[in-house]
Image 1 (cartoon, helix red, strand yellow):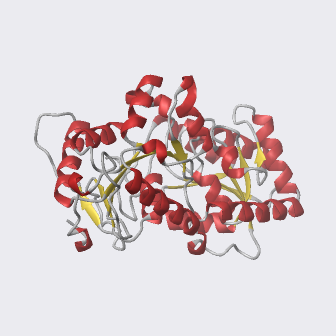
Image 2 (image 1 turned 120 degrees about the horizontal axis):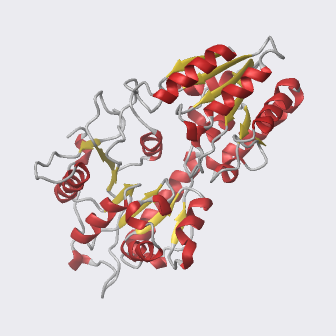
Image 3 (image 1 turned 90 degrees about the horizontal axis):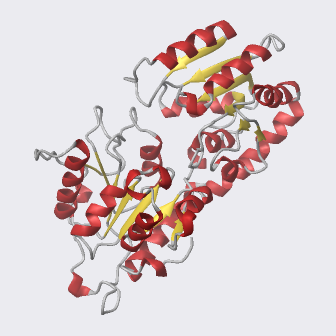
Length: 395
């Protein structure tokens, strides 16, 4: 296992106090936290997706991250424990669950935080009922097989502490009359680690994200095809591929977008490491996040604001919760609205400057330095009241 600091973890003995028939266990911070990634997330600089990037950013003292073994070296500043292989004839998801259970038994943490996998959280809760357990949801719970129904969401919330990354997700969890305690802890952005915004920004309109229909990249290309002939001193770029990582496949949609982008004069740079994406955002005058998918949060929008770019985005999902009044909004399925929003910014230097400044102010609400403390307090509170997750209180 990578990271020797993982040694010495121990699960609380229920006889020492577990919130059932006795006083809560007393902890001396920091808690020894085991954070479990979804199996497809890689905890490595050259492979990390959105959840792995967030987990790395928010990791605190005494924390170990668990996940599938990456193809490249994992982050070296946070202890990492690969989920052990299990050879039983389960499905891939079943083998991963069994491996995580073995890891919990071996590392004996004070608290487990599972990201985006209700099945994992449920399996851990069944085997370790005295272990404080957090489930962080990054996607619409009503689209998740295990918790699509109101009854299943209520059952889950009685076994784990449910945390979501946006108010939109909280509302989705509580739809259909669900009675449950659901806390909101937004995704954090390490503002101190962002590249400094360029003093003179490039005449560049940038799209950075997965090149899939849900992200509205086709609307971006079509809008650029209209606008670039009007603004010969401007450029447009797309950073991204079908998925995260340099091994992303060539899909039919990607091939079609590449042909359209070439015709429109939009440069496609393919997948780039996250640090290079942030560098591009810090120089681009405008960043477009025209998602047609109901984004559970909208990390690309937050990063663009933190880097000082003027933002054009959609009103889907949690994007308005993130951007507030610090963006221009457009519907990716209404091409004239996308063209109009980009045109307003490309033609008005003062408006671009105001929107960029407003975005940087807005991004301060999501500074990971602040949110890391809120997460630590949530963990400490959960350790005190477990298993009464209803006593947590709204974050």
